[in-house]
Image (cartoon, protein in one colour):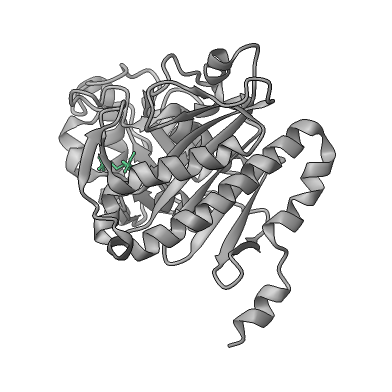
Length: 351
Ligand code: F6P
């Protein structure tokens, strides 16, 4: 197969972004941010691919402001991404690895929230990891920018460092996919206007936490597990990668639903994932690809953070499924309701 011939016919990222860059100054700035991050992602993909050969040990280091243990690759990724953002029109960046937003150029028009390396604990197992970013116009001041709802985002995306390095980009109300072509170090367009299938019988959840979940979540998953023998009358497939970018990418390709709900474990009562640099950007991607994202009780994009590293429950994927799970939360106490209690028994999805 002649790979070069195929790639010659695909638009490169920088050429593809010419059009949005011409629309207005805010979009031109967002394009500059995406290009800066893409250049850093090419570097990071190389470091990840070489791993121990370039001194990446995967060893634990300090604990980041959010309580996660930092790996050496987290520190490298954070440096690469923040250095890249210094070359772009960015007023401030909030990184997972830093407690508060860092001011870059206070006069610049945009603010960025970023998870430089999501899922880094997976790297030791050679499982896909990624960089997630969210871009929003600077509001009246830098801090209040990050406390606006997710609907304030003008673009968002993630890079996934897997068998291929891929950029999923939400810009101008659409979602496109670009694949890195290593010989030229360029991202090229490989998926135009992605659309999530409306209703795929596949779910992803860390099932080891079942005993900690709310009744609404337990009820939904139990109905999936009952499959064709249960009230939903069809079999479901299950996946759990433990890497948000990989789960989001799978949903973009074949639909289904992902849940990281709140649960009763200490530290998980607001879920695990972070609103500003995980849930908000993937929710924008889901919605602009015809999917949905919810906390079970509210649309993720309508939520505002109260603190920079705030967590949130996240349910995302095929729109009908997300709507069904939202319905199961209706009228049920927020958490800790007993799945077997009479109230919950009336709230089944298929009865
Ligand atoms: O937020 C980091 C992350 O690794 C996500 O990418 C992933 O969805 C989640 O945590 C996995 O969490 P757990 O190890 O609790 O299943």
